[in-house]
Figure (cartoon, rainbow over the protein chains, first blue to last red):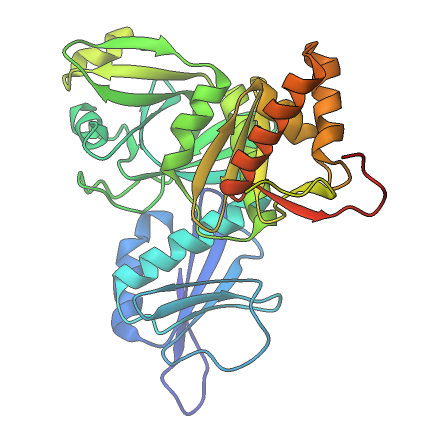
Length: 261
Length: 100
């Protein structure tokens, strides 16, 4: 979904529309190399519903002006959200673009009753199983042990509450498994905190324990109190409404036998 | 160092918090630190509104938990100081007479 835009006197701006977790976005940029990389990287997520959020990528520094509603800097690149526009300034490579997109998405999802979670998501029998935990707990192993095509993401999962139902979406953000991410969603069966163990065993968690398990793994980048209150409200609802478990995990595929159907 | 008696206690306005399973989870967005309050701490937290002194909060605690007033006061003061040391609470000058 790419279209060159007229822009007299400079390289043409090109645009790429994509949708992540149902959030429609439009990237506009003049850097042909970056455009090519982004188009390939987000190909599975191409296309957007009506009225996508336009993100203008600008090569130079941001102009002086009023303070942004939300901003974030990453290795010389900057995200700035104003009421009239969203700018990514100083983005020179795909990695920076990817990072700023995650940050923006984490912020935009507050308005969609959703959040981003460091977790592998696997679809089984039409339901999404989310596996989270510390680095090294086994998230990538779960992905590698799952049938091809069933992994929505092995790095960053997206959860949204829609019509009273929590759904997990794939994202294009890669992990070790380097699954490209699948642009589909499924209702959430449960959230499983992986703990390395000698045997596979499941322990149901109370909402408080689920919230404790979620918080260190949620991606969020705003220090603004109101945004954090909204995030905590969303997470508390998720912890109350989604079943959560500790999964003692032996790092073999037999773990599915102890999971709820 | 104890706060003077003529102050009211107020939640740090920069925080986000939520009660779940009778406990309170507090997030400090500036440093991404998570704090948890137990049942008693949650009770105090709910009643801290920038308009009550330690003595008034202790009175509520004594009534709710059927604790002797002197024990409630010392417990309340200890909890308030602990929460203040974690930057969860701030004090504001009392705007009316407060019993010592």
